[in-house]
Amino acid sequence: MESTYFYTVNAHWTGARTGSVKPEEIKLPVFFHAPPEFGGEAGHWTPEHMLMAAVASCYVATFSAIAQNSKFEFLDLEVAVEGVMVKEDMGWRFAQVIIRPKLAIADAAREERGIRLLQKAERSCLIGRSLSARISLDPFVHMPHREVIEESDLVFAE
Image 1 (tube, rainbow, N blue to C red):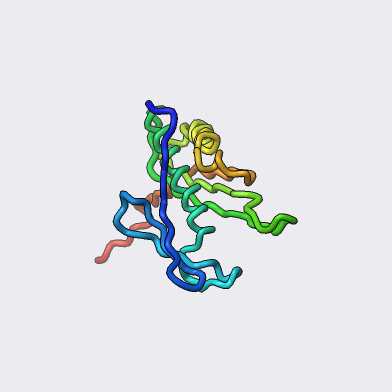
Image 2 (spheres, rainbow, N blue to C red):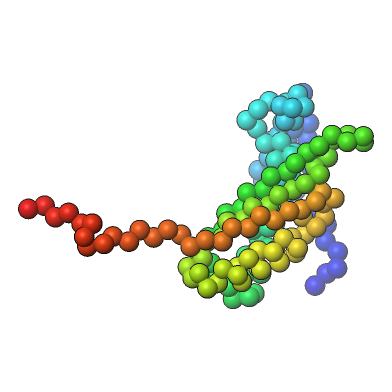
């Protein structure tokens, strides 16, 4: 395995506070605007959204690899990532990134192991480890609700 990899993305200004980004090997660009707080239009991808998306997607891929290597079975994983931006003397920056994974498992006996693997994914995610912001993990492991219908609950038509 190599010890160095390069990832290049090209950005292009498209007017006002808008643009597009695209790696050379990907056909479709991602168009973005500055966020409304900084003079952009609402309802569009922003660089801030893309940074949080990078953390979220890296976390999902990292957990998936760790679970596979650990032979840990799970039903589903949803991850919400929230970035907390603050204004400091040098300007705006993300001071904290909160990762909120919601892991669905079929067996309650696997909950503790699931939490440990979620924590390992947080420590291993290379995007999160590359940020100067404090990374916080707020994991939730659950068994999806399965509605059980009792025979006494059934109503039969006569």
